[in-house]
Image (cartoon, rainbow over all chains, first blue to last red; front, side, top):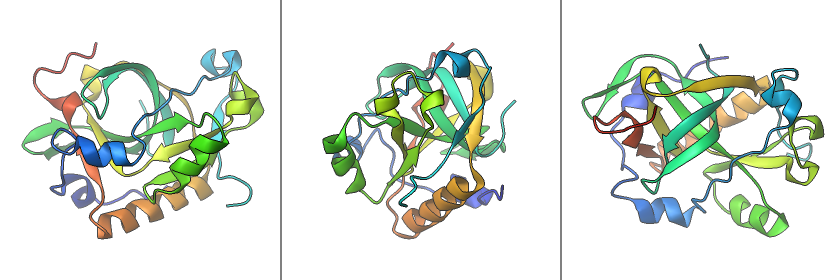
Length: 54
Length: 142
């Protein structure tokens, strides 16, 4: 997989500390994914895809 | 060890609201060492969230900064929660030595390409924000 350039990650941007309202506007609440027992035990390797209609 | 495009679970991290969150899933964006705001990091990731229901999905879909994803039934505890989203608009910075994490799998190549394209677009629009809570001196994560 092609990586994004280092400059992408070192760009000065607003921080969530000062921009909680921005984060909240984007439905900030992230809900943990409840993985199956097989995944958590390492018996199945997750492969995340795009929705079929994407 | 983890690499770009991997799905990892981090035992404890500080979320965008400054509160500690347990066992959350992320997609790895970078494992290169660097500095942001003068602070070292060696892992950058986006949080992955579950989608609760259709109403939640509608709200999530309104925002350009979220990428909707799909997990097969066999991967999740509840098949009704097989859809999720990657919160691309927020980059979360970590130091691997300060966290406990394990790898569960990866994004498909197609999903990685869609995420990369979205990140580039968000970058051009200056709509990305950084979460550096987890690399700050006083962050207690282990």
